[in-house]
Amino acid sequence: MMEDLELNAHKNNIPIMERDGIEFLIDYIKKNSVKSILEIGSAIGYSAINMALISSEIKVVTIERDNARYLDALKNIKLFNLEKQIVIINDDAFNVEIKDKFDLIFIDAAKSQSTKFFEKFKINLEKKGTIITDNIYFHGLTYDMEIKSKNLRQMTRKIREYVEFLKDNKEFKTDIIEIGDGIAVSRRICE
Image (cartoon, rainbow, N blue to C red; front, side, top):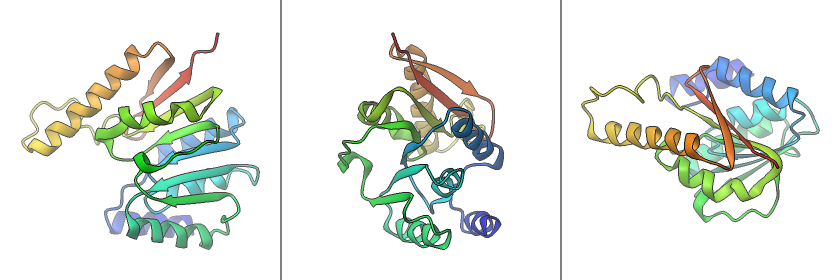
C-alpha cells in the first residue's frame, strides 16, 4: 500500500519526503520515544501515515490547507486504518490555534513560510521537544545563484534566510542533516 502511495505522489507531482528522509524521521521518532506530533503540511498524508505506523501510541495532528490534498490525505489515512491516531485539519496553518503540546513539530509546508511556522508553533512544543524541517536544500537549488526564475530565486532566498534564522536562534540548537532534501533538526536548549 505504501508503494502505491509513493507511486501516486510521484505520478501526480505531489511533493512527499524522499525515502532516506522519511527513514531518518522514522528512526528519530523511535530513538527519541516521540508520542505526539504536529505536522504542518499534510499533502496526501504520506509522512503522517509513516509516523503513525511506527506505534499505535503515536498521535499525529496534521494541517493541510489545500482541499483536494486534504481529501486525498483523509482517504489515505482511512485506507491505512489510522483515523484514531491521525487528526487532519483542513485550514491554513496560520488560522489554526492549537493548545496541545507536542514532542515533535514537523514543518513540511510552504518553504517561504518556514520561519513564521516555526515562530507560531514553537509554543506548542514540549520543553524537551524538537522541530524538524524538511527541504532545506530544496532539490539542490537553495545555494544555486544561477536560478533564472524570479519566484524560485525568492523561494530559495527565503530558505537561506530560514537557515540563518535557525543558526542564530538562541532558544534552539539546530543541526542540518545531509539526508533526503536536507533536514533541519532543531532541539530546544533546556536549562
